[in-house]
Image (cartoon, rainbow, N blue to C red; front, side, top):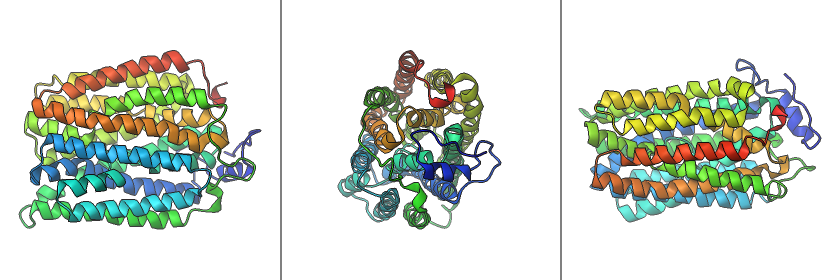
Length: 423
């Protein structure tokens, strides 16, 4: 499949997208896409185990659920501000340089958590670093990589590329969640605290490998001379409305990030770390499968309809999980939720990139990502306080209700605004 040059499209982008062949999943990918996907896979593996490791590590250091929520809030708030800075400066910096800087920051974050136990310095590292307590990708990497992907593929391939990007993240995140069981497996020969520090060190090493991958990105990922990145212009109204709605969804998601779900599962059902890792492994695999299912659904029913009518029932499953009588029942409901809840991820990313002009994409990616991160940053502190007060799943109920409200509002406001491939 060859790329199509639109009237406002960078010819370099069309040339690059002609070689991607991503309309069908078995086709070849360009070298730049392969490097971005490889970096996404490695980071997802690290995020997958760190999201589960973080609360257990902090608990072993003597900190309670409120402290875990505080650390989680610091990480998400810092990521939001860093992403905002990247968006504001996107027209002044090369995309490759921004990605290289983020990779070095990831390396420093892992080393900091491996070597420091005091809460105050950990809060500082969490704020300025890239640690991700959600298990998904909410860091500065996300808008930067989204911009690169959108730049090097044609419109008809865009959703499929985002689905693949999200799927490899989910698959390797699942492997990371399963890998966290190494803490229990090595307990007879190595103290859990030592294993945890080694795993944070591994997270830092992943940042260095990611740096090497980004170093080899080609000049094609940069904006062309005819459409350099600019601040939001004609698309400002649409982007701000989307950002506001995404913030509601993100606040709900922040209440049930993996780090806090880990605490709830352990407190409510007495599950071991390895068992919780298996739960997140299975749910992440289900999410990975759902990313690919989102592509034909989006082609058949449209991006907005796919986002809404898959996400809405998943919110109901989340609410039901709070009332689960056993760990097995909670596991089953979380699996049902995972089969649907992430279909809006590639479709949402594709939709944002589709309804703005190519030169506005870096700014649009940051503007929609930053409010999400800010909203998600506040939520863990509230969730941690609720879990400290009671082991009942109040965060799950509140999260599901907010997410359902977001779905209905999104359908009402954006069902009539179509991306180019749906017109």
